[in-house]
Image (cartoon, rainbow, N blue to C red):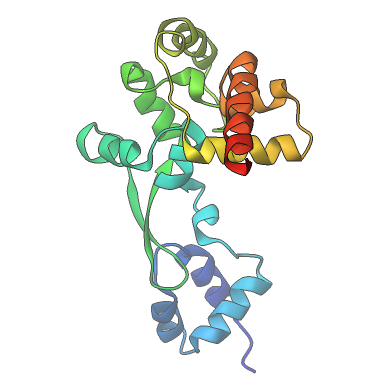
Length: 195
């Protein structure tokens, strides 16, 4: 087995996320399997994490919005996104957390900061707590948020796992009383179906 030179190791570190795996193998005159194994030995498993950026899907989950909303922000509202190649051939679109916060500060009307879980996107800017409080009073209470099937499932799972209504409310960005009422409705429907 041919040892990797310091230059080759440096090439791999610099190429992860920018160059396809098969291209790296070709450039180093090695097999893709050999490159994959070396990356694992180097502790590089997830090339998107190595970039220090997050995917559109990860950002949408952190913000509690639909993925299509974040995509619209990137294509129509100026949120910076970069294209990156993962270890194999898949291309992903990544967003720097600092770029997101910079964009969000200038587009506060588009984001409901109350729905953003604390510590979900680090480092958080100093203005976030004020924006979160503003949105709590001006956006969250004035809009009825319809429960989704996914939220219902998460609610049931958390109840089975012994979480309190308060824990579930915090997790789902809803009021404790709203969670209790929703669980009561779901339980009633389940009882009717069982009869």
